[in-house]
Image (cartoon, rainbow, N blue to C red; front, side, top):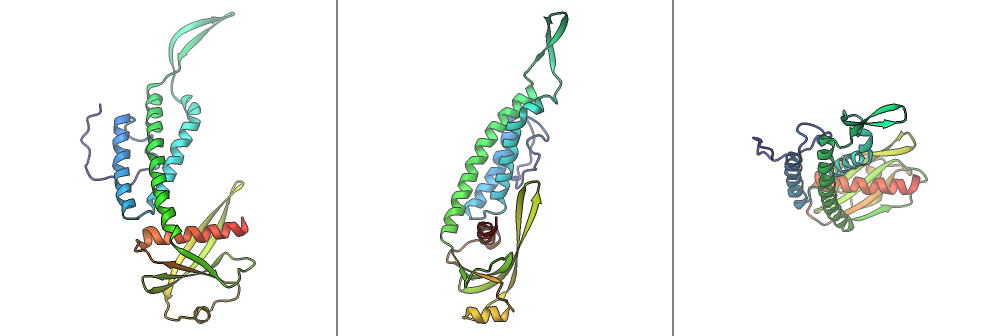
Length: 239
């Protein structure tokens, strides 16, 4: 057992290298992970999904990367000679394959993978349920090509206009996409044509209409989900 005096403040963030940093001990890492998960779960209960959902996925991928490549990591640790063997004319050392640090890391990684995947599923369940109740549609014809446009958001008896821009990054053979979305103004006009005229929109600008009846955190839930939907629409057209 590990006896430590640990600050009881709830851990709000895990370092990217948390699996390998500080003390490599199962009980200690279990404590660190569960303390962080407690914070994430409380936010999930309030539908504050961002950035916690994405961070869970990132940590899960890191753990799975270790589990997949742990054999190559074994070679980085010194091996203990436990005897010698005779092979033809040469005497060869026999090494102990097990390393206590790697054994502990394996145990931590297996446990972490199970916990992280469980809470990723919980986060995804909430995300999918919220998204399923968002009315999302485009106004007019879809332009031949678009990587920017507007979202008109109907929220709590207000109409809010946002502008978005999508960027594509090429890393090796796999493209990656990013989206920026900024608030333009509150909208009083009822006519979509008047709205597009007001913002100086041109024919190539796409306009998405988003209707949300739920009371949800904006920055931690509504905005990232809308970004995700817009990005998915873009990929469906141009990936």
